[in-house]
Length: 172
Image 1 (cartoon, rainbow, N blue to C red):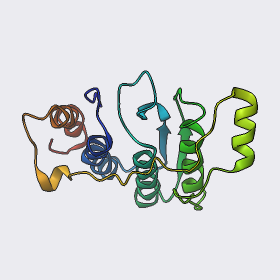
Image 2 (cartoon, rainbow, N blue to C red):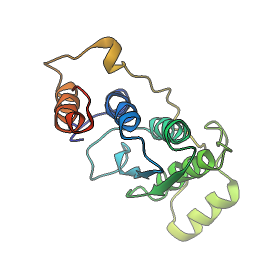
Image 3 (tube, rainbow, N blue to C red):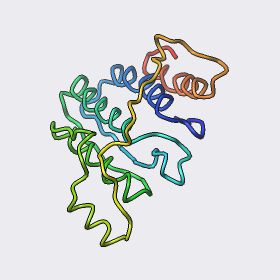
Image 4 (cartoon, helix red, strand yellow):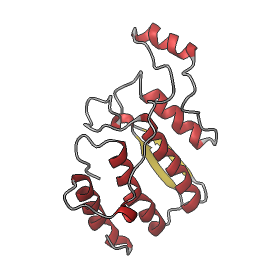
């Protein structure tokens, strides 16, 4: 989905939930394969999105639930891009692995001190202290709140739904 530059947690989660669950229900996959790039994070210099680690974690949880709902729990969760290799990628993927393994990492837990020392030894950068960005992401549900024709994010969501949904017997 081509999201507007600067899309943050609320928009990213709104877009995900406006497209993915309904499409998966219609598609009925035998296995769910997802790619969880950390380049959507606000510290990533290239993607021009402003998503927090906490929203990334919520999408990983949603994918886990969707895999159980639509693919009998068969889920291949892959890491992906991301250039904030000290602050973001390791925490994002730790959350993903924990969720996939059925042992989610508490977002408020501290980053292990041994890992932080090793990061500093290798990079001379201080690693993050906690497994969270400290945010509590929320979003407006597309189905409940409706479509705002003046909103660029809603325009992108609707364009995606119009392009993909009819192929699966769904209305945009």
